[in-house]
Length: 428
Image (cartoon, rainbow, N blue to C red):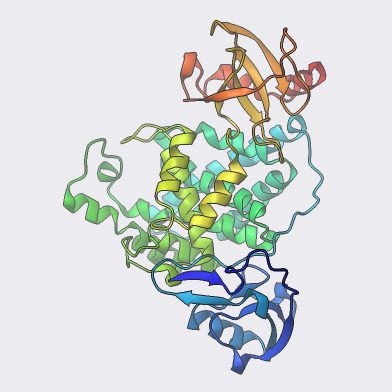
């Protein structure tokens, strides 16, 4: 079904918001719940304000409240013919003090290293039927989130360094980190971000029950092999259900991250009303990270190609609104992307700009003739001009490996040394 707002037919009409108190016994599908009879933090709802789209959502409200407030101007009609949109969110823009990249990179690196070691242990424990250290998982997620909130560019750089030999473990860590960054962009509260991080960290544990020769097969899978691969969500759910302290959000993501809005996904072929909001987020991040990573059976695609794949599958496989927000969050040239400047020089994006997507901070690594040069830091959000007085601008993105530049090579890693970053910024 497709959602339309009652006021969508008159976009130029000024509507005065109205709220009214409604006993939960009198709730109806389509009502927009804007306030509860208790603090939002005392409930399991993922966002503050949402429309009632399904009987299960209405039942959940009735189970925890005696009455709620509804906003009649945001009531929705449920129409057949398209997937349900995600619930509207009250976007928050928290004023968090941002640490300079040079100050955060070492803590981010230590947190990332700790997370990569833990997820390898977790996957080994799942593979051998042992109890996983759930408390340690929560600790890693909390530490990564703290780093992301101080300066997300540091972590976004580190997750680009995956080796295809450790793809599954580092993919889980990357999805966890990216999901929290994306969730923060969407306005989710910190406790919800931690749940999202746990969901990302554990979403692919079911793959540990798949024969590695099939999981990492470089050629095309047979029909029988693909059917086995499609069982990994069920294996993941089974493994996590046996563990203490696993949040419901993580169980849902492990089981549902390959479901599609049009009902053609697996393992259940669920429709839009059965795919939770948090799982929709994990589904997009999971796909993006897979597309842009080197794997045993596929090569890494450029970020722009990944964006196009997400856009083309919007509404059928992925939530259309969330795809738009995901691309908006990462920006046209995400951290770790190689770019060509208008001068012909080649640079790598080291830090995003919150407002100006096309003007990130970059480090120039190749001159106009595409030859190695002394690294030079440019903050494109400032008035920075070339020798002819023309402001620097990015002409376009380049695939990893262009002109001998690979994101995981020591040449690029050296520029993320704290002292190098501090020196770059002083010289800029």
